[in-house]
Image 1 (cartoon, rainbow, N blue to C red):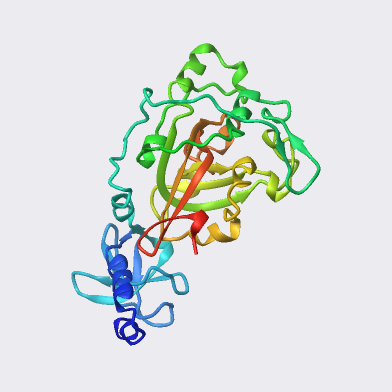
Image 2 (cartoon, rainbow, N blue to C red):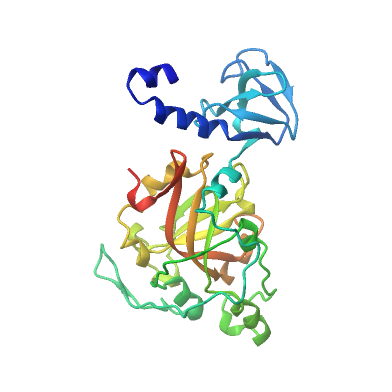
Length: 317
């Protein structure tokens, strides 16, 4: 790669790309074969077992194989991506503008009251009030907030994922006992920022829609359900759900599924900023599609790890 880059006069840029990849480590999570090429057509070089670490040579997968080097023996080969994970969390966290990551959500952080209003569909002559259709009005108002802060509290993934919440099973917080409401109110509404990896991106266009968006179902009228995990390769069951809303997306023309999808099931992280919110409606999803009922909802800023640094999705080339 260096020879080619020098020939076209961009050696320095390419060298930085190589260095960024070289900093990434491939961690073996399940027994895997180190192969001579990205296929199962030839005998393996050797078998690798957890928790062996390898050096990543190319960030892109080929036939779902990663190109790696085994440091101890200097064997170069390919490993099946489903049996390993890319450990670039340290690299991503280092780039968080020097911020110290909070390991807990501090009740002393400001939690401004949500600001919202009526949403007018950009594609149909329909509107939706701040509390949506009849349902959990208090939760819907928080989902539909439109205020945006200029600063966020950078937290570890587990500061949100492990945040406690009451055991009440009612989907409507107006039915909760006061002590359950008090648990949520301690931290709900804080502005947070979390780094992770995307494993699912689901615009809620199916079925009869959600009460929060007055049962609208067009792509420009619905929330995006996005699953964010701590480490590349983690399953959706371990995720934090982060959601963009149509009320926020109308200000971000570059927030499209097409632009964000390359970071789904990618070795490159994303950085999500928005409002911490508790959603009691999806307890049946725990252990399958999420780890917690705490969400970042709505998302107010999306940044992706691109060419060795954070790039706002609004200005991504």
